Length: 200
Image 1 (tube, rainbow, N blue to C red):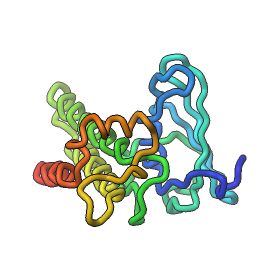
Image 2: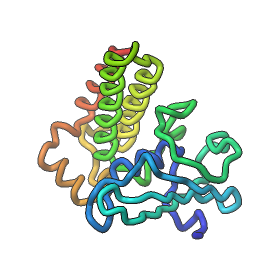
Image 3: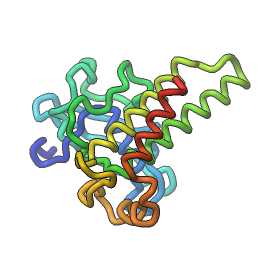
């Protein structure tokens, strides 16, 4: 296992989980099976290793991160276990620092905002069919959605309404920006955040 200094740092287990939601399989480009992800934590090296498989081709995918910035209480004395979505964790804090993510770029966070909002919508629809919706769970999903927008805004320079080129970690995400830059402005993201806050 690599030392933490050789790996990209993460700030929470929630950030690691969300990484699996937007990272494609390197072999076929299919989605990773995030719901079956497993983590192993080395508390001495402060390394978090993920084991996951592609949902389409079932090829294994392993990824390790520098976990020295993850609060110790998130591991709850565990050295391994299933990787849970952030809305299923006690706290929906994805990054307790003012620094932007090293593993998810501004476009990833905007995608994850949509993912969290969709999870909240599905939870509400299921509640209508089976029983009263779990409003606590829906609120947690919306909190994660808001946190994703907060993480996107961390990439912006103070005096610029558009993210810098360094805010994009892949050509695919950079191309998304050039195709529809209006969806990446500080004002647009701030408006989304305000709209989400009004939903409660």
